[in-house]
Length: 90
Image (cartoon, rainbow, N blue to C red; front, side, top):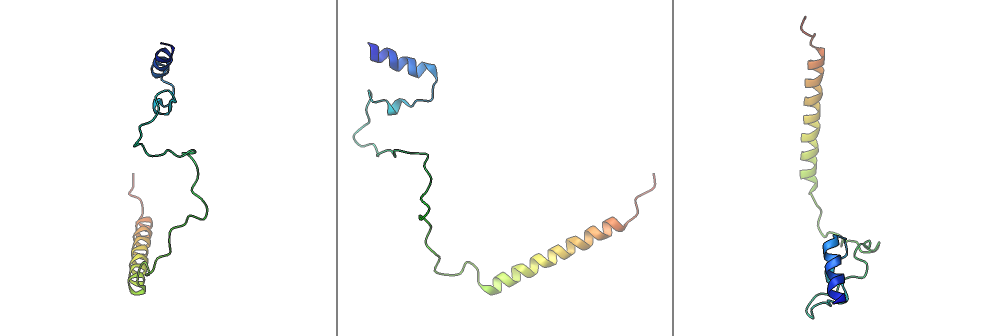
């Protein structure tokens, strides 16, 4: 009776305690083991493996850089001509 009353009090109170972690209920036999510290950080030495091939070949990289420089230059000239035009009279 006391256990049911305490469980209903926890469930109805809206606190953040998980009912699944309650030692009175237990866990199913096929449940995966829960980590002791679920909010822990990834270890410093757990880095992804290095890539075997280059991300982008040099020719593609040069083409993309050329396209970006051309777009930057077009934007700069468009902004300069827009700022050079006189404002319409009021």
